[in-house]
Image (cartoon, rainbow, N blue to C red; front, side):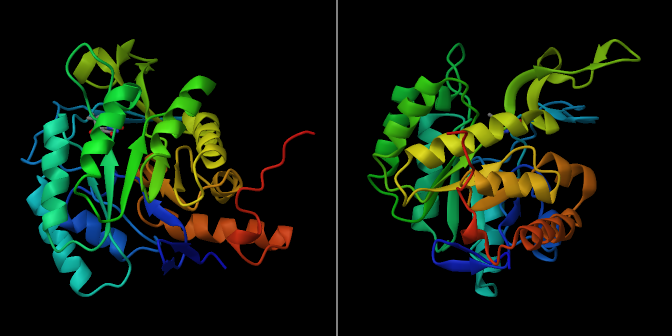
Length: 310
Ligand SMILES: CC(C)(C)CCc1c(C(=O)O)[nH]c(=O)[nH]c1=O
């Protein structure tokens, strides 16, 4: 009932982890393999391993989470090694995330993947930092177009981009116009809402050490923004660019709403961090129950069919 075709492969369901959550180590990735998740993705990798920011750098809070991890990861070779082993005895394509801390590093990372035997799907995290004083890459439209132009000179494998949220109709239009120029497999929207601040009510203190407590926000807080971004891109991008919906998925109803907005695959971050991989079974069951109640046999029956008020 939840079968989902993505890039010519039929996944059991559209549910997967969001990059960064439960995907840093082989152990965590293996647990996702063994869960009810239809697919899964690795932690955004850089060329060299990175320690990341000093802890505490992640905090669960009542309505979501806040993080300023600083891109801790075991380096691209660690994840490529895992990916090449994984694809030897699994059919379902693995999603592989990369996030260079410079344009050059992004190109080097993708060149490495292009030259490898990796057969899965690559996700370029465009929330990666830019030169100090300039906004993240995905908020720098000319730079985004420059990077994608350079990438598609040599990269021929399936590629998606992970985007931060946008909050202005002109930005949806401008970003979609750029993305429509490239043979992208998908757009993953949204990444955490950048630079939020959470204060502990007991201690009057922020809850993460880096950046004086400023960090990306996930969880319930972000669903309306996530749904808007999914819908905005689903209605602006050429049909061959699919949408992966991420942000604020805690229940089957949240998953259903992302699908109504036009998402094909669904990524879960904060609530996976809170609940563990058992969440995939729960959300799959809740989503199936909603579909049954509404008389749908497949997701294709309602994907993208959110109603407006005419
Ligand atoms: C924010 C960056 C560190 C530039 C990229 C990695 C990342 C992080 C992170 O590793 O801090 N956290 C997120 O919520 N989203 C991300 O894309």
